Length: 254
Length: 265
Image (cartoon, rainbow over the protein chains, first blue to last red):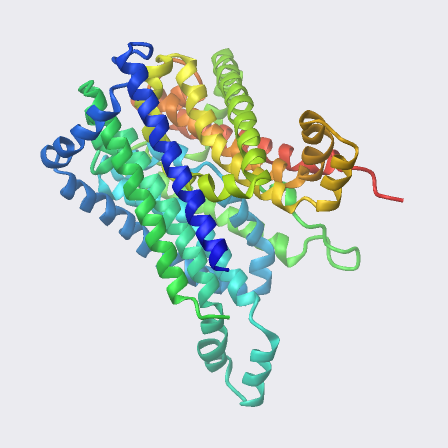
């Protein structure tokens, strides 16, 4: 077991070293003018411009805005998605009629409708939050249905033998048993919401971190653009990792 | 709309319209009525919610417009290249990573975490590298498409029955033969699934890039209708794009069934 972890860490170190090596090779190729420095700036220059981008471009307030939009979308998704999922699971006919539609909606390229949201909500944080909401809704509904439908029959029979009313049975047995699956749905919904929030910020040049990239690119600040993209990627990766941790922490050991 | 092909057929003993079908029809009708009421109410600015008649007229006009087919061709061409490049690269990386435990431990978490990041923010870089023409849109699509294909190919590789791999080895198959005769046929389902996901987000990547900066393609048509505030046309184009995306998605799902090997005797 211990050797397995050690070899995993070794492999990860090799992977990270490989990444650093690739960056170094790019640096050398640019310095030798084999790669055009007006297309790819020096990695060292990108690294140096990190500080500049963070201090001069109001990164903190941008980050707060993006996080706020994603959080708003997340709250909306929870408040609408979970009850809708419960409703669809409770009423068999509704589920039979609409579950495939929700699944189809999950696969639909919703973000392409962003001009529509612009027309309805204006060029504002509301538009961005609403797109995040619509993009994250379907997985929450589907996972809520899945979680409630997958409650172990043993648990339900325990409820029956205690002569629970349907209301009690739902709140003391079915819903708690479905929570881990619902959280998986919420994690997916939040990730979809964040992707769409940042993407639309970039596309409509409004608001937080997505706009930062657009701004720097339009100023033709190459090292700044690259640094901002790396920064946004790091922020989203940190976000995914955090949400995953929270989910694992909330999930009871099975 | 997207799943109208899935309407379940009620068994013969039931009335010709089951409850499920009635619910669906009722839902769509309610939606249409609310829409029309909203259009007629004047609560929103004029044409933000145009009447269904206007949208239908715009739909007919778009379908009769040769420019639509020209732009559809441009987008299809960009998506096809994006899928070919991103899919092939994803497949190669997926087979490499899935085939080696060391490479998986070294690199797979990068793919796993980079996969769900918003790809469209790379668009400024793609413009610098590949220009403002179709090249940068293909690159956007290929970049989006790469991750799901690579991840599902890697997962598929690990699920291949080791017996099959040993058969290949004992026949001293070359790497190329192993890939073509053993790996790819054995992981057909995850690969097709990855390609389906990849195609979906390649379409999104290409179209979003077109809305941001281009002078042709369906994304450009949508954003142009928006700029001219021609709302019925914009709705018509969005409906067509969603329908086409659903059609393509269904087509790729069918691919798995068609290419399934004949059942073993």
